[in-house]
Length: 258
Ligand code: SF4
Image 1 (tube, rainbow, N blue to C red):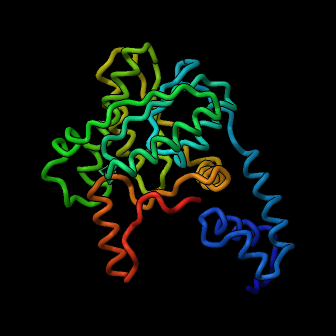
Image 2 (image 1 turned 60 degrees about the horizontal axis):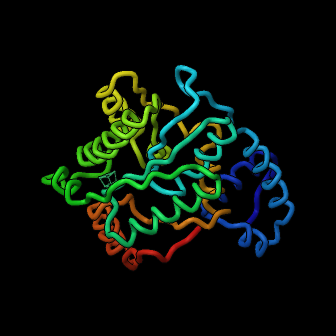
């Protein structure tokens, strides 16, 4: 690999590739460019230190965080802990299919919460209700109406629990993924919060300030399970169809780890 006019901005590009998983440190080593790896590591540490210290809306001190999976929750939880915000994790994702995939995602999330000594609430897997609620939208594209209903269902349940348990603020890890429409996620959250007096949905943009990059780095460091589709049976069907067109194997549940 030849990098003309190698400078700091070139190392930033390489780091971005590494964070996106297109190249790994090992691959760099086989390419004999150790000096670039060193520079990237230096830059990575400066990225890690960019994590902001956050405050909750209305100067609240605790938040209920709906979580979809460990990789999405990684940086958010670490940032909240570093900000000395009291966080409780709420796992309610009846969209995830099949059950085996659901159990893996939940257990990974639970394990990470335990490591950080964060309370973990395991809510119901009422997947029959999820299928009922999204009936007729089986072939909607991702980011369409089915996803709006999927967020609504998960956030309504989170908002109810928040209200019952006296939380004034709740949020979700769902928006950290670049595959999601942040506006759609926020709209659902705000709507769910509006059902209860005094409850606020925190629309913080978890992707900014290096959040997306740290999310991947933490997932690699913790060897989290790497899910290969959004979660529901329909997103699994879509990804398998795409793979089939590209001549690739179908998704194998429980196999791929960061
Ligand atoms: S694609 Fe993802 S967000 Fe959309 S309905 Fe399926 S699980 Fe929910």
